[in-house]
Image (cartoon, rainbow, N blue to C red):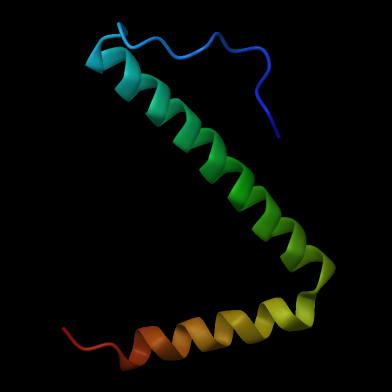
Length: 64
């Protein structure tokens, strides 16, 4: 998914601008990842339930 609407990255951009851009791209990525996970859970409820059970077992057996 190329981002054609962005200007090319300039080496003169400040660190704050680069960090803000990185955080914005990360937020978009995490939002899309969560949407994909929710869609998969809706489409495959049995597999999603099994995954939740495995995660619950992992959490129960976790030791600090």
